[in-house]
Length: 85
Image (cartoon, rainbow, N blue to C red; front, side, top):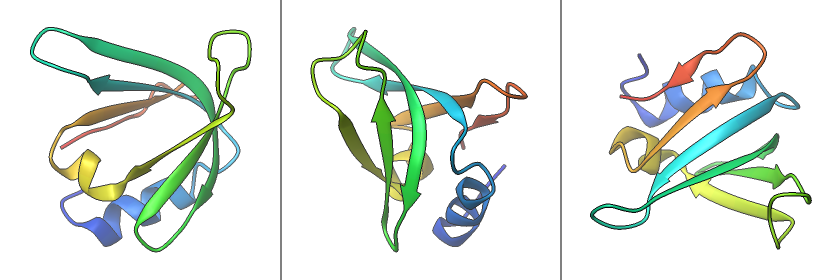
């Protein structure tokens, strides 16, 4: 499991262009599940292009710290890898 921001970025760099599911905590009992494709990684954030059939907007970005602090979980559909802490 990735334990630093650099490790998380390197892991995501290997999966650019792959389909994924992002599960985000939106409150105490509310969870948001979004499907899309990992588009880009930057120094401190990564961008997911969302499926237009399921979402009203095109892109969403998350920080690597969201993964590190378990605010979000990512599962890649290709090999069912989960990136979480």
